[in-house]
Amino acid sequence: MKIGVISLGCAKNLVDTENLLGLLQSAGQELVVDPADAEAVIINTCGFIESAKTEAIETILDAADLKEGGLQKLIVMGCLAKRYKPQLIEEFPEVDRFISIDEYGDLGHILTEVLGERIPNTYGKTERLLSGKPWMAYLRIAEGCDNRCAYCAIPGIRGSLCSYPEEELVREAERLASAGVKELNLIAQDSSRYGFDWDRQLHLSSLLKKLDKIEGLHWIRILYLYPDEIPDDLLETIKASKHVLPYFDIPIQHGSDRILKLMNRRGSRQEIIERVETIRNAFAHPTLRTTLITGFPGETLEDHELNLSLVKQIGWDHLGAFTYSREEDTPSYEMDDNVAPEEKERRRDEIMSAQSVLVKESRTKLIGQKCEVLIEGYDELTGMYLGRSEMFAPDGTDGTVRLKSSRSLESGEFVSAVYTRVLGYGMIAEEDDA
Image (cartoon, rainbow, N blue to C red):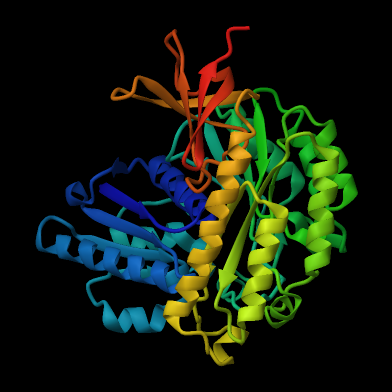
């Protein structure tokens, strides 16, 4: 059967999609890129915030239109299906089956019934089929979250923290490396708490030490570390490693202690400052990334100024600011959403404007500094190679490096270079011939 798969949402959702693709491939199904060519379409949805829900609904509607042509079956899975399944069944009769996340253990049986094709019930056990660049992969180290932030619907969708066994992750990383993956990006809702559900201890350092020994892996990056759980032993592990990058993705969400408390976030503004200072003292050139929310219920102008001042004080290498989105089934849903939408946007714009100035200043200081660039493409118009240095994650939010070279380079190749110019949030570099 010709099957098209559409993946929406975050990297964690992408791993689910790649597990699905591996399952379908193992069953001998024909995977097609264009949904218009498919006999069946499966959409893996995100349902985290309003914009993601809107995108998912629009994608379902577009796919449903294909039923007027050759499309026989339309299946919707993922976070949206988990969160709103009864409502979706009523509103979208064109969809043949909605599959909730908690049904994935029976995914093969469900697909066999709906598609009329024999699909083994081995989801998550069959080898993933990587859907992106063959030299990069995500490794999801845990599912769910125990943090219960007041604004977040994820625990209700994905459940409580469930860390994957170390030996399974090492085997998966070894398989990926043997298949040509050179950059491994560790992901979870809260990577810093990996293993905490086993014995109330943090096990990320132990996992990193084992992954660092895998032949073929060149970069290992950790995404989503909470600021109050980056212990000194983790910093020591990263510093002693050969391949784990000093890249610290720390979603602090706000710079006001009062708002942090309303958000049900652990830690404080001062603790954030101190942890960042510790990281910068431990590494010569660490990369620091964060996310912030503007317009959370009860946020005053004074709170906003504290948020803004922390941005300026720390000087993050990468920062994303998002306006508060009121979500059902979260504690903050019952709070008075008293900040007007246009004011939320204004505060967000003010933070991002300040960040753009800080980025220009910090990126300028990089000029003349040596770096290593992972080549990912070539721009015919400029004659430059496109890639990323270790300070740029692959999720499209940090920026890129444009590289000048006098020789022919291959995608997936690592090249020694020197930064020469700032280009927006990215950099221009030249290959280092020294």
